[in-house]
Image (cartoon, rainbow, N blue to C red):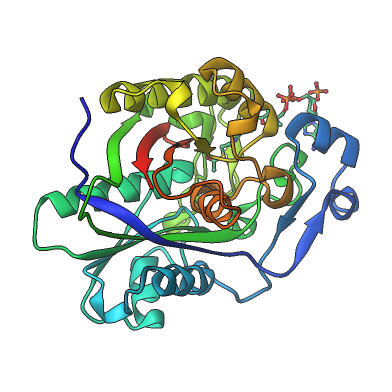
Length: 329
Ligand code: ACO
């Protein structure tokens, strides 16, 4: 059953660092080849922050673009919700640093930890806050500096990730455009497949073989791959059903950008076809929670989501977490 939207996306923005790391550059760091990376992942380049640049810095840039497009001043924001797993510090929330940097003095700010689903989780939570009433504008961000939590000696993972930020401004809905259906789910039984053990209190985390784990992104790629397709398929079909629309009605699918093979299979399994799935993983790599809002902003700038179009965004990530959102622009 289609819902009456309580909020709509009034503006989007993105920011990626200037520095580009090519596959050839990575060949000099670990035992890999451009051919292996492109054939297994579709990734050609990724953007990497310079030393000292933090997640809140790139979030600020993406947010200012989104706010400008939405015609919303920072003072008019009621909430800032930021999905990230590579925040500036353990606490306070990186959203609070963004609040300070953009001057959103009237907002409440907090982070969401849902790995690559972080932006969609934040968007869904933000949409829910409108339903509670008395809310006009919410800034939702997905931003990562994954290069700071990547093990640059591990060829299994270091070729995959990139840094970047994407943002969207949600405004109280006035008509029939906006968020029509949402779905989010997680399965903590799969948490070991994709995680960063960190080093809180110097505590050491052991893997299943009793070995010490390093404080970087740790991933069992093949298992993640299988679950990614299954979970995004589930999330997409759920929002289509709630919205009472079929895959043929969708103008564009904007999925989490982890691996072009995952996206090709997703296009095939959902029946949306390759022409209606947005792909930019070749240029940015996997930017975790930033990937969906970066792709959304680019898709809008390319004119792929005109007024009245129907879009599904879908993501999966560590946790495991996954979700989808059906939106009418
Ligand atoms: N260069 C060369 N060889 C490599 C590299 C590399 N960069 N990385 C791994 N290999 C080797 C492996 O060591 C292995 O060698 P072996 O057979 O001698 O042991 C071989 O390549 C094959 O490894 P597989 O893991 O089977 O390769 P696969 O085809 O599965 O591709 C990949 C690996 C790209 C990681 C894939 O599994 C994948 O994309 N998985 C999903 C990852 C993902 O989407 N993560 C997103 C979530 S991230 C988040 O939430 C923060």
